[in-house]
Amino acid sequence: MNNNIVKKIVKSSKLTKYEKIPSVYKYTNVKDYKKLKPFQYTVLLKNTKVTTVIGGKKENHINLKRGDYVICGVKKEKYGLPLEKILYTYDLSNLISKPVFRKGVKLTKKNSKKKSLKSEIEITPSWGGKQYLQVGDMILQELDGKKYYGINENAFKKTYKKTSKKKNKTKILTY
Image (tube, rainbow, N blue to C red; front, side, top):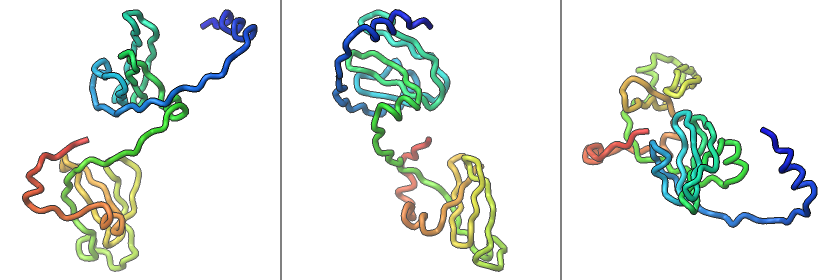
């Protein structure tokens, strides 16, 4: 790319300072970024070529990766930004966990066959890596029934509660 003309214009001009007016964008989970409405954004789940069209004219295109963002601007233009640019330019809002239901079991001396409370059991959680669980910690099963992960006993008490049978019949959200 040759930006020599732009460099000459910038170098020979007196620059004026501008401040962007903050805008609030709402996260929307869409598979096709073209369905975004003004002031919405989504996170890409796969590598995608994003084309920006404004006023019927192609303004830009960019190849983005999984985890990058697509934002819909005030003129319904969809533009893509890599995660690094998002982190530099935008304040990210709070993440709110979805209500999900899990089956699980408390790790005990009996079911772990450990003689000491301090003995660790190493597991590989569903997202990879290693976890080290002790007696009292919880093992929870993912919705597919094949993968699992562990949660520290104290963290579990603060983030999970036992559900009644009626609540288990509600719609289960997956991610």
